[in-house]
Image 1 (tube, rainbow, N blue to C red):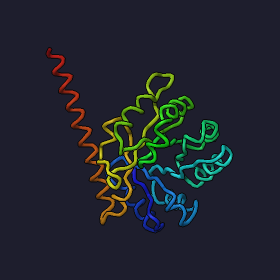
Image 2: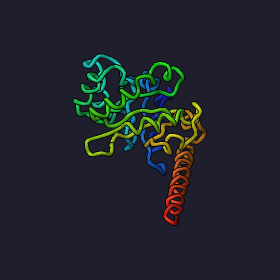
Image 3: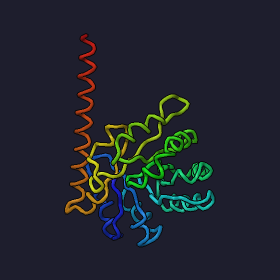
Image 4: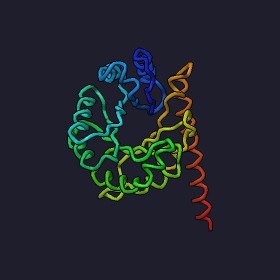
Length: 233
Protein backbone atom coordinates (compact mmCIF):
# COMPACT_ATOMS: atom_id res chain seq x y z
CA UNK A 1 0.00 0.00 0.00
CA UNK A 2 1.47 3.31 -1.11
CA UNK A 3 1.02 6.22 1.30
CA UNK A 4 0.34 9.45 -0.55
CA UNK A 5 1.62 11.93 2.03
CA UNK A 6 3.23 14.26 -0.47
CA UNK A 7 1.90 17.81 -0.70
CA UNK A 8 1.91 18.14 -4.49
CA UNK A 9 -1.44 17.15 -5.97
CA UNK A 10 -0.06 16.86 -9.51
CA UNK A 11 2.61 14.41 -8.36
CA UNK A 12 -0.02 12.36 -6.55
CA UNK A 13 -2.19 12.06 -9.65
CA UNK A 14 0.82 11.12 -11.78
CA UNK A 15 1.91 8.46 -9.29
CA UNK A 16 -1.63 7.07 -9.11
CA UNK A 17 -1.55 6.62 -12.88
CA UNK A 18 1.88 4.97 -12.69
CA UNK A 19 0.89 2.53 -9.94
CA UNK A 20 -2.21 1.57 -11.88
CA UNK A 21 0.05 -0.40 -14.20
CA UNK A 22 2.60 -1.58 -11.64
CA UNK A 23 3.29 -5.30 -11.15
CA UNK A 24 1.94 -6.24 -7.76
CA UNK A 25 -1.04 -5.92 -5.45
CA UNK A 26 -1.22 -2.22 -4.60
CA UNK A 27 -3.58 0.22 -2.95
CA UNK A 28 -3.32 3.96 -2.28
CA UNK A 29 -3.62 5.63 1.13
CA UNK A 30 -4.34 9.35 0.94
CA UNK A 31 -3.05 11.18 4.01
CA UNK A 32 -3.90 14.55 5.51
CA UNK A 33 -0.84 16.46 4.17
CA UNK A 34 -2.05 15.79 0.62
CA UNK A 35 -5.73 16.32 1.40
CA UNK A 36 -5.04 19.71 2.98
CA UNK A 37 -3.65 21.04 -0.31
CA UNK A 38 -6.89 20.65 -2.24
CA UNK A 39 -9.52 19.28 0.13
CA UNK A 40 -11.69 16.29 -0.61
CA UNK A 41 -11.29 16.90 -4.35
CA UNK A 42 -7.93 15.13 -4.28
CA UNK A 43 -9.72 11.87 -3.48
CA UNK A 44 -11.87 12.29 -6.58
CA UNK A 45 -8.91 13.24 -8.73
CA UNK A 46 -6.92 10.22 -7.64
CA UNK A 47 -10.04 8.08 -8.17
CA UNK A 48 -10.23 9.30 -11.76
CA UNK A 49 -6.56 8.43 -12.30
CA UNK A 50 -6.54 4.84 -11.07
CA UNK A 51 -8.54 1.68 -10.54
CA UNK A 52 -6.59 0.83 -7.38
CA UNK A 53 -8.38 0.80 -4.01
CA UNK A 54 -8.19 4.16 -2.23
CA UNK A 55 -8.02 4.49 1.54
CA UNK A 56 -8.71 7.89 3.08
CA UNK A 57 -6.35 8.12 6.04
CA UNK A 58 -7.99 10.96 7.92
CA UNK A 59 -7.19 9.37 11.30
CA UNK A 60 -10.77 10.31 12.14
CA UNK A 61 -11.25 10.88 15.87
CA UNK A 62 -14.38 12.79 16.81
CA UNK A 63 -17.87 12.27 18.19
CA UNK A 64 -20.03 9.72 16.32
CA UNK A 65 -21.95 12.27 14.22
CA UNK A 66 -18.86 14.17 13.04
CA UNK A 67 -16.82 11.00 12.45
CA UNK A 68 -19.63 9.57 10.34
CA UNK A 69 -20.02 12.83 8.41
CA UNK A 70 -16.29 12.97 7.59
CA UNK A 71 -16.37 9.33 6.52
CA UNK A 72 -19.46 9.86 4.35
CA UNK A 73 -17.79 12.77 2.57
CA UNK A 74 -14.70 10.64 1.90
CA UNK A 75 -16.76 7.73 0.56
CA UNK A 76 -18.77 10.04 -1.69
CA UNK A 77 -15.53 11.52 -3.05
CA UNK A 78 -14.33 8.09 -4.16
CA UNK A 79 -12.64 6.46 -1.16
CA UNK A 80 -13.08 2.71 -0.80
CA UNK A 81 -12.12 2.79 2.88
CA UNK A 82 -11.57 5.22 5.73
CA UNK A 83 -9.23 5.01 8.71
CA UNK A 84 -10.58 6.02 12.11
CA UNK A 85 -9.11 5.87 15.61
CA UNK A 86 -10.46 3.13 17.83
CA UNK A 87 -9.59 4.87 21.09
CA UNK A 88 -12.43 7.37 20.68
CA UNK A 89 -14.91 4.62 21.52
CA UNK A 90 -17.03 1.89 20.04
CA UNK A 91 -20.01 4.22 19.58
CA UNK A 92 -17.92 6.09 17.00
CA UNK A 93 -16.79 2.87 15.32
CA UNK A 94 -20.36 1.56 15.10
CA UNK A 95 -21.63 4.84 13.66
CA UNK A 96 -19.11 4.68 10.80
CA UNK A 97 -19.58 0.95 10.21
CA UNK A 98 -23.35 1.48 10.01
CA UNK A 99 -22.90 3.88 7.10
CA UNK A 100 -22.08 0.86 4.90
CA UNK A 101 -20.27 3.28 2.61
CA UNK A 102 -17.07 1.23 2.30
CA UNK A 103 -14.43 -0.47 4.40
CA UNK A 104 -13.76 0.77 7.93
CA UNK A 105 -10.20 0.46 9.23
CA UNK A 106 -9.45 1.24 12.87
CA UNK A 107 -6.13 2.34 14.34
CA UNK A 108 -5.12 0.08 17.24
CA UNK A 109 -1.44 0.99 17.65
CA UNK A 110 0.82 3.42 15.80
CA UNK A 111 4.48 3.45 14.79
CA UNK A 112 5.86 6.21 17.03
CA UNK A 113 7.12 5.89 20.65
CA UNK A 114 4.13 7.77 22.03
CA UNK A 115 1.90 4.92 20.92
CA UNK A 116 3.63 2.62 23.40
CA UNK A 117 2.86 5.07 26.16
CA UNK A 118 -0.75 5.87 25.28
CA UNK A 119 -2.24 3.18 23.03
CA UNK A 120 -0.47 -0.04 23.97
CA UNK A 121 -2.03 -0.24 27.46
CA UNK A 122 -5.51 -0.38 25.91
CA UNK A 123 -4.79 -2.04 22.54
CA UNK A 124 -5.83 -5.57 23.50
CA UNK A 125 -9.24 -4.32 24.58
CA UNK A 126 -9.56 -2.14 21.49
CA UNK A 127 -8.77 -4.89 19.01
CA UNK A 128 -11.18 -7.33 20.66
CA UNK A 129 -13.94 -4.70 20.66
CA UNK A 130 -13.57 -3.58 17.05
CA UNK A 131 -13.31 -7.22 15.97
CA UNK A 132 -16.63 -7.94 17.69
CA UNK A 133 -18.24 -4.98 15.90
CA UNK A 134 -17.00 -6.28 12.55
CA UNK A 135 -14.62 -3.67 11.17
CA UNK A 136 -12.94 -4.55 7.89
CA UNK A 137 -9.37 -3.75 8.91
CA UNK A 138 -7.06 -2.66 11.71
CA UNK A 139 -3.78 -0.73 11.78
CA UNK A 140 -0.83 -2.31 13.62
CA UNK A 141 2.77 -1.00 13.51
CA UNK A 142 5.38 -2.57 11.23
CA UNK A 143 7.98 -0.93 13.48
CA UNK A 144 7.01 -3.38 16.23
CA UNK A 145 6.39 -6.71 14.49
CA UNK A 146 6.05 -8.47 17.84
CA UNK A 147 2.92 -6.41 18.43
CA UNK A 148 1.58 -7.38 15.01
CA UNK A 149 2.08 -11.04 15.85
CA UNK A 150 0.51 -10.76 19.28
CA UNK A 151 -2.47 -8.54 18.45
CA UNK A 152 -3.34 -10.32 15.21
CA UNK A 153 -4.03 -13.40 17.30
CA UNK A 154 -6.79 -11.52 19.15
CA UNK A 155 -8.90 -10.94 16.04
CA UNK A 156 -11.88 -13.27 15.89
CA UNK A 157 -15.26 -13.84 14.29
CA UNK A 158 -18.20 -16.22 14.66
CA UNK A 159 -16.80 -18.48 11.93
CA UNK A 160 -13.59 -19.01 13.91
CA UNK A 161 -11.05 -17.39 11.58
CA UNK A 162 -11.13 -13.62 11.33
CA UNK A 163 -11.60 -11.95 7.95
CA UNK A 164 -10.35 -8.61 9.32
CA UNK A 165 -7.25 -7.54 7.44
CA UNK A 166 -4.22 -5.84 8.97
CA UNK A 167 -2.35 -2.91 7.46
CA UNK A 168 1.03 -1.95 8.88
CA UNK A 169 2.79 1.38 8.28
CA UNK A 170 6.39 2.23 9.11
CA UNK A 171 8.35 0.59 6.28
CA UNK A 172 11.74 2.14 5.42
CA UNK A 173 11.47 5.77 6.61
CA UNK A 174 10.46 4.74 10.13
CA UNK A 175 12.85 1.81 10.33
CA UNK A 176 10.89 -1.35 9.49
CA UNK A 177 12.11 -3.55 6.64
CA UNK A 178 9.81 -4.80 3.89
CA UNK A 179 8.19 -8.01 5.08
CA UNK A 180 8.70 -7.40 8.82
CA UNK A 181 4.95 -7.05 9.42
CA UNK A 182 3.75 -9.44 6.71
CA UNK A 183 5.67 -12.42 8.09
CA UNK A 184 4.18 -11.70 11.50
CA UNK A 185 0.55 -11.66 10.43
CA UNK A 186 -0.10 -8.43 8.57
CA UNK A 187 -1.84 -8.42 5.18
CA UNK A 188 -0.60 -5.10 3.79
CA UNK A 189 2.46 -3.00 4.50
CA UNK A 190 2.35 0.75 4.01
CA UNK A 191 5.26 2.50 2.30
CA UNK A 192 5.30 6.25 1.79
CA UNK A 193 8.44 8.32 1.40
CA UNK A 194 10.55 5.44 0.08
CA UNK A 195 8.21 5.32 -2.91
CA UNK A 196 7.03 8.87 -3.61
CA UNK A 197 10.45 10.45 -2.94
CA UNK A 198 12.19 7.93 -5.20
CA UNK A 199 13.57 8.94 -8.60
CA UNK A 200 11.48 6.11 -10.09
CA UNK A 201 8.49 5.55 -7.77
CA UNK A 202 6.83 2.83 -9.85
CA UNK A 203 10.00 0.73 -10.04
CA UNK A 204 10.67 1.24 -6.34
CA UNK A 205 7.15 0.12 -5.46
CA UNK A 206 7.59 -2.98 -7.58
CA UNK A 207 11.01 -3.69 -6.03
CA UNK A 208 9.67 -3.42 -2.48
CA UNK A 209 6.71 -5.63 -3.38
CA UNK A 210 9.04 -8.31 -4.72
CA UNK A 211 11.19 -8.05 -1.59
CA UNK A 212 8.13 -8.79 0.54
CA UNK A 213 7.19 -11.74 -1.66
CA UNK A 214 10.71 -13.12 -1.35
CA UNK A 215 10.53 -13.03 2.45
CA UNK A 216 7.15 -14.75 2.38
CA UNK A 217 8.47 -17.48 0.10
CA UNK A 218 11.43 -18.07 2.40
CA UNK A 219 9.14 -18.30 5.41
CA UNK A 220 6.83 -20.73 3.66
CA UNK A 221 9.85 -22.80 2.67
CA UNK A 222 11.03 -22.97 6.28
CA UNK A 223 7.58 -23.98 7.49
CA UNK A 224 7.33 -26.70 4.86
CA UNK A 225 10.82 -27.94 5.72
CA UNK A 226 9.97 -28.14 9.41
CA UNK A 227 6.70 -29.93 8.62
CA UNK A 228 8.49 -32.45 6.41
CA UNK A 229 11.11 -33.01 9.06
CA UNK A 230 8.43 -33.67 11.63
CA UNK A 231 6.66 -36.14 9.35
CA UNK A 232 9.85 -38.19 9.01
CA UNK A 233 10.20 -38.62 12.76
